[in-house]
Structures are given as C-alpha cells and as structure tokens.
Amino acid sequence: MKKLLPVLFLFCSLATKAQSYASDSARIEEHFRRTDHILNILREFRIQIYIQPEWQKADTAGAPGVQGGNFPAAANNRFIIRRGRFKLGWQHETVNKHGDSIKVGEFAFQFDATEKGFNALKDMYGRIIDPWTGWFSIQAGITVRPFGFESPASPMTYESPEFARMNQTIMPNECELGETFIIESPRKFKPVYLRFDAGVVNGEGIGNTGTGQSSVSTGAYQSAKDFVTRLYVGKSFDLGGGTKIGLNASGSYYYGNVLQTTNNVFEVVKNSVTGLDTMKNITVGTSDTLGKNHTNYHREYYGAHLQLNFDYNMGASASATTALRGEFIAGQQPGQASSSTVPLGAGTALPAADLYVRKFQGYMVTVTQGFHFKAGKQPMHTDLTFKVDNYDPNTQISGTKITKGAGFSTTDLSYTTISGGLTFTPVPYMKLMFWYDHVVNESTGISGWSSDYKKDDVFTLRTQFMIDSWWFDKKSTTNANLISRSY
Image (cartoon, rainbow, N blue to C red; front, top):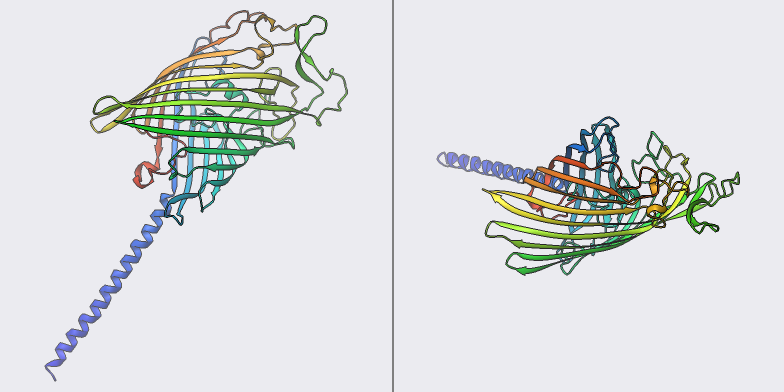
C-alpha cells in the first residue's frame, strides 16, 4: 500500500497540471478570439488624409480666376494649402443567404483645413443598405451632389488641380445637406455597374459665402428644397493579353427654386422698340413687394457625360491607360448682377442681392494618357492630361451685343480654359503635378473687354501627400474606395 501512495500522488499531480494546461489553453484561445474580433471591427474603419501644398504663378498681379481664388492685388505668385482633408470612414459587411459578402452600412466624416484655418465640413453622412439584396439604400447628411461626373469626383485623384469654372459656379464647394435614395449594384454583380441616386437637398451648399458677405451661409433660408438625380452606368470588357476597354456614362437632372428676396428680378427680354435683347427688371423696380419673399424662380440643370478607358500592356513590366471624357451641362440659373452664383445671406439670413435669371451652358473635354511602370519593386505612375472647358453664363446674348447700355456686365461673358499638365506618382503617398491654365474670354461691347482680357493665365506646381489606412490591411482591398482610387 505504501508503495502505491507515491504513484497515486504522481497521478493526481499530473491530472491537476493537465487541467491547468487545458484551462490556460482555453484562456489563450479566448484571448485570440477576442483579439481577432476587435481587429475585425477595426478593419471596418478607414482613415484617409491628404494635403495639397502648391505654388502658383499668374501672368499679372491680382489676376482673377477659379484656380484657388483671385490673387492678391499686389501679388502675381503665392504659396497656398489648396486643400487639407481628413476623412474617417466606416463600412460594415455581412453575409447574405447566398453566401455573398455585401455592404450593409456606411458612415463618413470629412473636414477641410487650409492655411486660413478650418474651412468646412465636406462629409458627414450615414448610409444604411438592405441586407437581403444589397441594392437599395438610404443616405442622409452632408455629402457630394450626385450630379454629373466632375462635381462628385474627389479632388485627391482628379486629373486637373481644379474643377471647371462652370461646376465651381453652379455647384460650389462640392457638398450639400439632404437625404438620398440610392439603387446601386453590389460588388458581386458582374454584368454591369449601375447606380441611381435621387435626393432632396437644401440647395444652399455647405461652407459657401454669399457675394459681399463676410460670413458663410450656415443653413436653409427658404422653405423650398431642391431635387437632384443621376443615373450612372459602367462596364468593363476584358479583351485578353492585358487589354481592357472601360465605358461609363451618366445622365443627371437638378430642379430647385431660388426665393425672390428683393423688389428686383432681372431677365433677358427683347426691347419692343429696338428689337435688341436687354437685361430688364421684370418687376419694374417699384415699391410693389408682392413678389418679395413669396415668389420662387426655377433653378434647373440638365447634364450628361461619357468616358472611354483603354488599358493595355507596353512590354513585360509596363502598361498604359488612355482615357477620353466629355461632359455637357445646360439649364437656368438665378444668379446676381456681379456673379452667376445663387445669392446667399450670412448665416440663415435672407440674401440682399437682386436676382438675375440667365440661361447657361458649358462643357468639359478631357484626354489623359497614363503610363504605369516599376522601378525595382516600386510601382510608379505618370499621367499626361489635356483639358478644355467652356462656361457661357448667358446663352441669350453674346459678342458685341453684350453692352452696359443694354443692362449687361462682365458676369455675362463666356470663358474658355485650355489647360494641360503632367502628374507623377513615384510612391502611393506622394503626387507631383505641373499644370498650366490658359484662360480666354469672349470679345464684347463693354469698354476694356472688346477682346481677350488682360493676362490671367496661371501655372500651378502642386505637391500632394496622402495616406490611407487600408494600405496596411490587404484584406480590405476589395472594398469600395471612399475618396480615392488606386491603380
């Protein structure tokens, strides 16, 4: 019996240790499970940051323009931070009954800051997507306007430093506040990419300052809301051998109202005596205020774009992309005497500017030749881009018929910008851009504007730096990119 005691003691000791090891193993397994769960949650978040420091040189001091705003009166060159963006995004996916992973929720918060300080919010929205098909969703908050191609595009990846003059005028500052119903094909749907947006927005934009105002408009000043919609279709064809052809197109419509807030509203009418077109006060400019704060004037845009992409190999270690895109927009814009932008007041106050209702149209044509190659193991990209854009703020009058005697001004001039440049991306977090804008206005009957105005061309040298948290998570590369594209 005494001989069995040590054996029993050893057996009990081993059993106790085995239980301890099993318990430790379970705790370790639970720890890893919890850690993996936390990492899966963190993978749903995304941080994107980019800044755009640039040096610009204009032909003349005080040159006006849309390339970052007018130059100071006594300066013909400057350093500026054109944009400094921080974006926090979140996407949640689930697996449906067919075993497909689909996105069912999305949230984004983005703000912009420059050397002038905090500029404005650019994104603050949430989106919920149906978990059964992944096709239908509701989005609410501050986000880009779903109109055309250029206006919703990201300045981070756009081919030129700035959007066209027309888009900066009719839809300034990119963003709007409202709610949108979206139909979008899920990632697993291969036949074609399809997206339809239909939204209701305030119409004043976000972070915009009215002409003559020192503070921005902070919200809706009128009851009427604007409707905006777009249908976007894209399809890629793989021809084999590294050759692909991509096609995308869209059609857009915008309908809104601008409130008459003064006694005076001007439109282009034909003089019954001379037969000439004049900018006439259709409210006669009397003290009659029946229309004031009661009458709305239509703000209406039509737009369409078409783009073709050609991707092909150039040897074993290089490839190229040729892209051609055209966009056209026309409609009616209730603007002001000194600007064709929609009038705004400070804060939520009523605008103090008279309305000038004009018919407008414009277009943008862009051709880009991209080259993709490697230096050792590092991918590099170079783009050569040529762009032409035109904006005619008043299609009812042109040329020498634009005179001050007929009530017109330099606001009614048509502008054409011929531009081009080189973009070099040696690493994913840095992009160097050289760009030149040649600006031409139409000849008019206004003194000093009988031919192309003084020199107002602008050269831009931009150095862009960006970082994307999803670069470090290869599992996330299949998710939709929130504000940037990757080659």
